[in-house]
Length: 216
Image 1: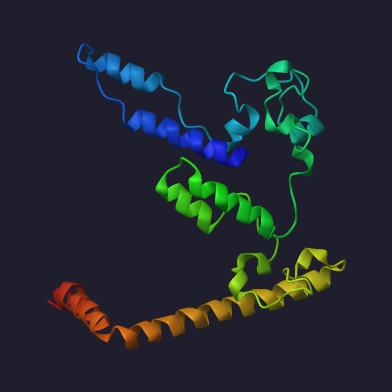
Image 2: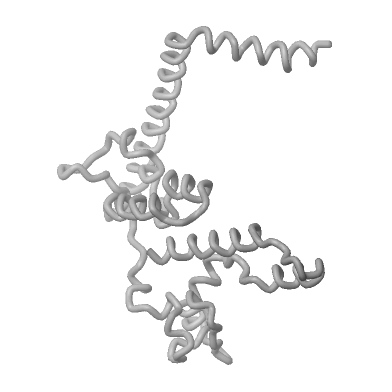
């Protein structure tokens, strides 16, 4: 939900700047200054440290551990209480492998989120909350034939030996990509048979619009 709130904030700020209009009694210089003074869309790193956008308090001489855990901000400052890195769940936020349930919930929220169409399509296709940890995680569920007894994915990170993890990735990756390629080829052939006239028209358009002029 924090990721979605950040995306919505970015969209609101981008929309506000783009849709700003000059007032009747406002000079071009004043209008430009007003637009420049509007809150700017923030990066995830900025939002992560200051969701409320009320400022942060930095440590004077942070240790290496404090830099790694709190990104140099003071975890004891009341002003930093909203920072994500100071939340109880932050240290355990990462989970190896693909969590299908979490991704399904995230996609459900994204569909109703007030964000740009491009961002929404990108998040539904490749959710930001998911970080691939193995070759099997990059393959869509429908093309992943490697399953556990309970229907989950065979995850490389669950094996104790490095060579087992490597073996799972070496087998899963190529197999999944071969299946994906086969689906694309089969789909193209079916499309060509079902819509031959459309394919012919598209081919002729390419020949007439690109190939022939290049020959000339």
